[in-house]
Amino acid sequence: MIGDSEWPLGLAWLARELARDLQRATRVAGGPEALWGSSSARLASCLHAGSEVTERATRARAAFRAADAQEALGRIGVVHVPITRAEYPARLRMIFDPPFGLFGSGSVVPALARAEQAPVVGIVGSRRPSAAGRRLASDLAAGLAERGAVVVSGLARGIDTAAHEGALDAAGITIAVLGSGVDRVHPRRNEALARRIEATGALVSEYWPGTEPAPWRFPARNRIVAGLCDAVVVVEAAARSGALITADFAMENGTPVLAVPGWPGAELSVGCNALIRSGAALCEGVEDVVAEVCHRSWRDPPARASAMGPAAQVLEAVSLAPAGVDRIATDCALSHADVAVALAALELDGLVAREPGGVFRAVVRNRLR
Image (cartoon, rainbow, N blue to C red; front, side, top):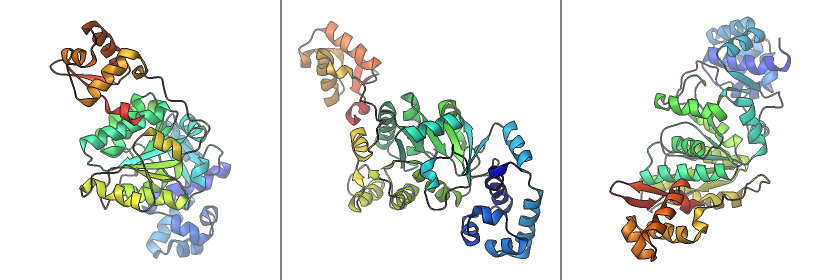
């Protein structure tokens, strides 16, 4: 027995053995600790299951050894943070049906500690976003990371992936919440991204390592995404989108929800526009999120090259339309040398990008500050 770690770890093990959610059974029993310590007859009643399931549950509970489980987790590099410990996120402890504990890989304890001190923003949305939506999610995450926020998402394709990448590209910390064991990255194409996240952030899940993703686990995962955050931003969502489930959980928690408005009638705009009609705040950039989340740890916006003379003119010119050096020099009444110096500085700051043919364009992120 490992004190107050046993029942959180034991219930996660039991959920894995039964391949079912134990949250309802926990409520019937009067709490998770009561469920773990209940008699076999009471366990059967709480599970509302037949004899076969009850016998399997009874055997699994009797065979469980917390010390052995902790040792096995350590061998595969997985940390378990039970709800009974101070390291468990305070926000998450307050939600309806909080997970019994979090399994994590990567820089788990430092990342969770940072999330207790910093603003935490969830960015979610469509798995099949437009190119503009993907860019906006990435730039929004980068801007928030630069302002000191921890970015949370679900490691899914599309907006989730863009949000994690944006935060990492800005040298920020991001936490991915999985609907599977932390050793079962889904989709598989995000394995490399998962490794990047683990370097400074964490992958977390309420499911025992080895648990495969399943459709019913993703809505359950979404309550954790919402529960970790000070605000949730939805970027592109159809009428029936998992991102809207996350937004609903956030609203139930009293957490601010923001949505990026979209073109009327567009499929990926329906969910976001509906959220705004129902009271979600409109999000057009980083400052909208900062305004919604009162937190003492927001950093000041980073200094931008756009505050410098010629660079400001050049950035304004390429923001209107991509252009080459000759056109920029003419439009800005600057020498070619001044334009070249300004473009070099703007490229270093990530405010412009060079395209084939010697044409320069403004990076969208500049408009999200």
